[in-house]
Length: 206
Length: 74
Image (tube, each protein chain N blue to C red):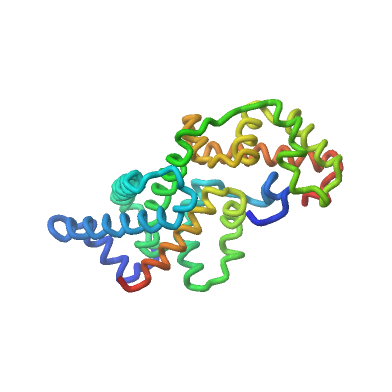
C-alpha cells in the first residue's frame, strides 16, 4: 500500500510531474538544493581531498547535481513516499558527489596487486592485533587468503581491506559496479571466516 | 566500522544486503534516525552493511549531516 505523502513531498511530486512553469520552477529549486548538498558534502570531506583544487571540487559538485537531477526525474514514478521526498532526492546526489570525490582523490594513484603481500600480512594487516590474538591466527589467516580465495578475490581483498582503496574506485578501474565489487569482497570475507572457523578459531572471530 | 581489527578484516557476520539494496533503504533509515526511532531492529540488515562497507557508511554519515544542515533556516 502506498504511504500517504507528507504535504511537502506531495507538493514536490505534483510540481515535478506537472507541465509548464510549475515543473520548471520545481526543477530549478530541486537542482539548487542538490547543488547545496553536494557543496556541503564536499566541504565536510575537505580534509580527505588535499589534491583537489577548489575549482575542480566545484566542477564535481555541478556534475553531481546534474547527474542526480537526471536520476531523480527518471525515477520519480518509482517514488512511493516511504521517506520524505527531499531525503529520497538527497541520497542520489550524496551517491554522486561521494563517488566523484573518492574517484578524483585516487585518480593519480595506482592500485597495485602484489601476491607477495600475504607473506607480510602479520605485519601489515594484523599489526593492530598484536597483544590481542595469538600468532597462529595470523598464520591461519595468511594460509586461508592464499588457499581459499581466488586470485580475483585476493585482488579485491588486498585493495579494499589492506590498502584501503574505496570500492567505487575499484569499480571504476575494473569496470564493474560498486555492488559487484562489494559482493566479491563480501564473498572473500565469508570464505576467510569459514576457513578460520574450520581451522578452530571460531571463538576468536565470532 | 569501529570493531576489533579482525572485524575490520573479515567484516561483521549477519545478513548483509549489499550496496544496491542498502541504497534503496538509505532514505527511510535516515528519516527514521532523524525522527529518533529505534532503528536497530527495523534496519538490522542495513546496519550490518553500513558497518561492513566504508563507502556506504560515508554516504550514510554524509546524508544525515546534510539533512541536518537542510533543516536549518537559510
